[in-house]
Structures are given as C-alpha cells and as structure tokens.
Length: 263
Image 1 (tube, one colour):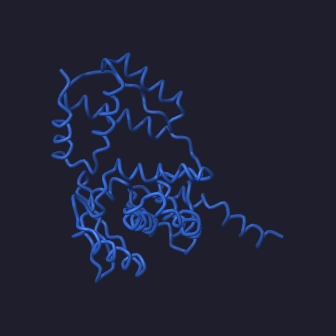
Image 2 (cartoon, one colour):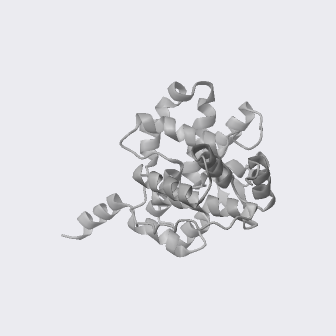
Image 3 (tube, helix red, strand yellow):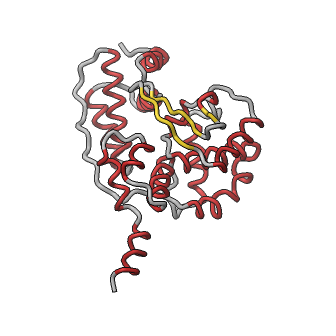
C-alpha cells in the first residue's frame, strides 16, 4: 500500500534530508503513473530519457524512488544509474548577469523584483545549491562579520560563506523590506525553479537553471586566483575531484592565456 505523501515528507525531514527534492520528485512521478510497479517505472524513466532530460535529473528520479521504496518497505528492482558524461561547466559572468538579466527584474517579477534580484545575486556570490538556499534562515546571516552559516541537516555539517560588502548591503536592504516567512528568501525549491524558468524563456542563448549560479561562483573564484582547495572549501565539495572540473571549464580564460603565451 502506498504511503501518504505527507507522511513521506515528515520521514524525510525527521531523517535529516537537506531538501525535499525526493518528496517533490515522488509527487511528480505518482501524478504521472497509474501503477507504481517495475514495468511502469522503467517506462517512466525511458520516456524521460526520450524527452531529453539530463542524466543528473534522471538519476535524481531514481534516487527518489529508492528513498520512497525504502520508506514503504517495498523491494522493487529499479533502473541502474546512468553514468554522467563530463561536460564543461556552465556559467555566466557578473557582467552578463548585470547587463542582460537584471534590467528585466521588474518586468518579469513585478512586486517581487527586489527579492528575486537579491536571491540571484546571492546565489551568484555564494554558489549555494537551491536546496541550501531553501534551508537558510535569517538568523544564519551575520552582517557584522559579513558571513552566512550554511547547515546541511543530512550530514550534520556546517560551513561559513563570506559575503562581500555589496552582497551584505543588498541582503540587509531586502530583509528590512520583507518579513521572513518560512525561510530567508520566502521561497521554496519549486518557486526558485520557476524564477529560473521565467528568465530562461527570455534568454535562450543561456541554459539558465539554478546550478548555473554554482558554476558561475566557482569560475568567478578561479578568475580571481583562488586556489582549488579554497574553492573546494567554499563549494562544500567532499572530493576535490568535483572541484577540479571547474579548472578546465573557463575556455575564455584558457584562450586568453593561450594567445598571450603561445606565439
């Protein structure tokens, strides 16, 4: 018998999951399947591959199914995880963010323009995942020290992310303008994704999604001569191999060096 999704949500929260991605994924899967069995799941995953979903998204669906079946104590064979294909990390520059995207905040988001603008800058300057942004509370911000404490319930770990003066001032201004309701930015993961989707419609030359800000943060650090170890620390990567991929990602920087040094 399938469990009530509210019960599954409470199970995830009680067991320290850093976000509710599994809850949202299972909700989406159940809304599209008449039966939750091995054949239906295989058909669902095969269809998502045909639709061109990324390997990461498909693997996340499988992870969510694994978590859900563990919760309801069902033994069902799931599709194997797909092996990720190495791609140059996607990123945007601060110049692109400010000149191309920011001028459209009021037109796209109306009365929520300030919140959206500050949230986008915040993700660019901190590299936080959308789930980490959702978990933040305003008490996590220390404006005197210009830092924010990021807590990951699943691993019981914390990390400090520095804030530059510009970002610190923007956050204080936004916090003064809007009461906290639920979390620091009053946005859940679904709402964050809808913001990026709304921007994507108008900027088709860039695959604009929440994770692009994480890559942009890493590239910005690399361009400003931060070491790989320092970037790893700020991104919260367990393995330095996850950080090293950003070292080869900035083809524009590589071309500049190549043209300057290779005569």
